[in-house]
Image 1: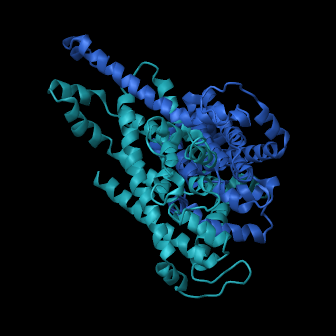
Image 2: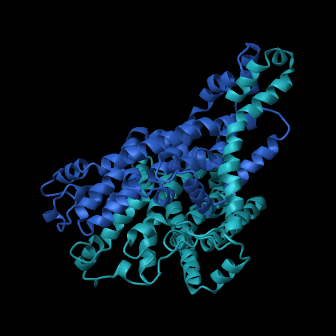
Image 3: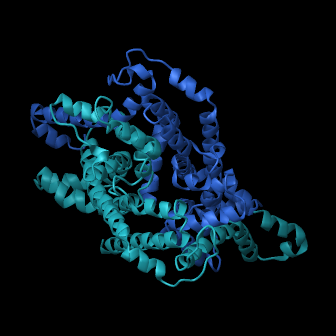
Length: 283
Length: 308
């Protein structure tokens, strides 16, 4: 379409086969990419006697593995833990990162630049370096084995703050000035006027934060010791160790941990892809 | 917000006499109060503490005592550290170029595909949304010997001998790296696609009028204009591979980082030093080394970006 002139000059027959081959190769590559997921799902639908049959479509699909694992109760608990943790951390980031990003983008005051640089500088510090002091802090304050213990390190992030600052900078000052003249207070201006103007950025931030916390393994592994408080990835890991070679059970557990994000994606594909692009370009 | 509102209530008369600038100042610091407290307590203080701990002999049981650079000296003399350093470097040096090459090729061709574009993109993107800890178990199962392992089963179908994969000191590291590359491709492809879209079509049109071949357009227009995207992805994925942990820990839970430490990355060494041996001071020194490596990567990034 962009090259109408050149495609008229070239005989169509010479262009088409190349396109078809490109498409086919890309398609095959894509199928290879999802193969591990297909095998995971198909094995979760097989009983122990069929596991050695490596066909992707199970001969006799059954939900027994899911029923057994979910009736055991632990996975339900871990699922709830992960959901609570991921949602609260996401809400906290959406609120605080955008509040700070807005303040740094739209207020003029002494110290603004220093605060921005200070927050940005924390991006240089890898989580792994903070984990030992956090662990010390958590054990001193009794936060080991609590939701707060899992959540506190991620309640705000410099990445999110930076992302939101970038987007608030493109909000015209006139909008905010008009609201100020109408007598709205600054909090209301931020919440009611500025926030609705940056919803694409907010959804990108929410998607990234949720995904990051849903799949997080390192910190939850350290800060939880009782199975009651495990998040889904940590619980799955301990469950898989205990199942040893019962691969159909392990694949069922892995499916339970993975399916929610995949299903969310099917519904929100457009927003998620756009969110990744936004975060990647501005971040 | 509550801080500012509280002040407003307490000093009602004063508030109405304040200038707009003064009010703005109070609002701004009111908005920043809780976040600043968070950053000081949860980010800055622990950073200093990590440096401090790295020069102590702190273990879980006894209080920390200053030991100077002893932990660092011990680390440099520890053969395990050099093995781990080599592994971490291998993850980086193999993972980054391989994943970027694959994702660029896919993105470059996917950009031209219109038919079922978003469906194919979704196929590549889906693995990015998975939980690394869960996927490590799927791949671990793939690498099993026949009759259970999918890959060995396929190999024997082609008459290729069985491969030990995770049981071999030479094959285990690439075998652990594969799921990490696989899971990251979708993200890189999306970013490359965004970068490709951002190149103005007029550049290509001009090049075609000048009679440049597709290869020349790629070399002279596409790649140079993609440089910011490339630098971002190189740094982003390098940091990811340097911090690899979830996959390694889960793919061999009997002996994490095994066989014979052949797959052990720095973060796993930190984890084991801290939470298996409880040598917190020594582990802190290892985290400082990780920080220095990541800092160097960031400085290289800044350098590359300023060359632009």
